Image (cartoon, rainbow, N blue to C red):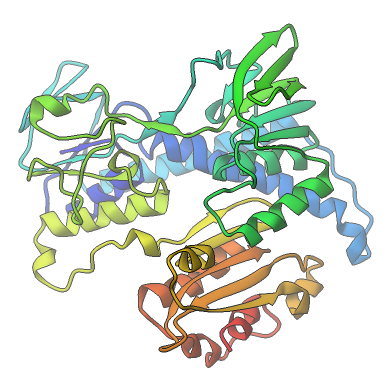
Length: 444
């Protein structure tokens, strides 16, 4: 029995069904996941549109004359089409595997029974809770879904903002800053710390801040938003240091809340922390032995890739495959990417964290400005950085800023996951010309 059909739930369902389980999946909203289909996919689709526009603006660097005009209705139709195609494909895959789908919201009434809000009562031997999350909306920011928006109402918003204020400078905040500045909006970004992406490598953040500055983005560093007030067609954002922003629209990108508040967890005997995240062990098992939890509700990395991997591992575990070779999830080795321009991606141990822990490391860094393919593509921004153990040469982590960083990081992720050495990368015969050549150079 699976509650939630996002990346964790639908992956667990298909894998478990393939392995012979009788699977029922309960989803109250979208099979495929609201966070995935209403957050991740449409934002990346709009970012891709913005990237094409930015590319047209740089076309003169490649000897071309080009102009790009934004068609908001066409963008909206394209995003909706992608969402629908993915939704249909996920549902079709589940149905082809014999997974029973129930539309509705499930709630535990005891340890083995779930009641669906549409009246059906279902029982199961093993349960997976994967109900996802929703955007956090603070009391000081009254949402109107017109000019004060969360990320889910902005694909695209009712109109392209003339001046957008983004509150929150984490991954989602910088992606929205990039997206709308590329689409032609004036953008102000409220940065509560002294750098964007406070959890990332300072060198990575510096490249992104420089790109934002070149685009005319206003960075309000060290400012924390305290009030949002709409007056007619304008919105004012007040900050705790006395500064304020007068904008046409505001987007809140200040985190999410797990969807666990109406699941009957305590009734079933499933523990959660004071923020609502479900307590799990290394096998994603909750405090109730036959109940698993995965995805955003598990309080681990809020990434679709992590949720899907949790779902697969859970299916393998409950079907007994852990009695054979079974690698536990290591969240510290999860690759992640930020789809700004340039793209940002990292995996494993960060340089700053290693120094903070007093750990000896070897750091090698190669700029894309020396890469032939980057020069051919007319986009030599960014760099490759690889962190390794100076004694053994084992790759411990890495970060990439630049074109196709989200794809290139996979090479370093495989190395980190499998304890490969830098020589395993540098000795590989790679394509020339290719951006990946910088990986080999950084491994030398």
